[in-house]
Amino acid sequence: MLKGVLGTFLAEPVNEVSAPALARERGLSVKEVKTSETPDFTSLVTLRLRCGKMITTEVAGTIVGKREPRLVRVDKFELEAVPEGFMLVLHNNDEPGVIGNVGLTLGEAHVNIAQFALARDRARGEALALVNVDTPASAEVLDRLRKLPNVRRVHQVAL
Image (cartoon, rainbow, N blue to C red; front, top):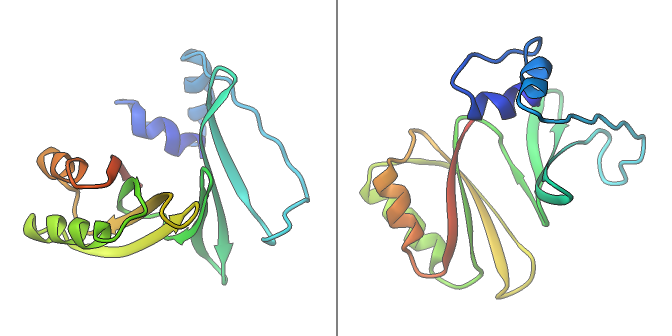
């Protein structure tokens, strides 16, 4: 997990062996906690990224079947998404038309949707979409998505 997180932000190559040293060099502290208390899953891995005392992001994943990884929680949102390739992370208001507008915007830009996972905190509250796409969305497409009605934030992740 550390390799994946650092590899996203660093220009230099990161592997499982170099990741702990690279984190220390950059003043990052890494804490590994193991517990047997996972009420909903046989095994669950949770990654918490903190800035100071505040949790900024929390992602949890598990394995389903024999070897199928799944993201099952992002912050307060419970969902099931495949963690691979290029993913768009959209936070939006839970209102009608958001999914259609996102699909139309991506389609017009010739960005094919591979999978679309959704979650919301409550009806008409805040929602989260994890959208696997076949090719990365350009900066222009990301800006168009951010300007859609009811869209709060958009990020792209490459796994």
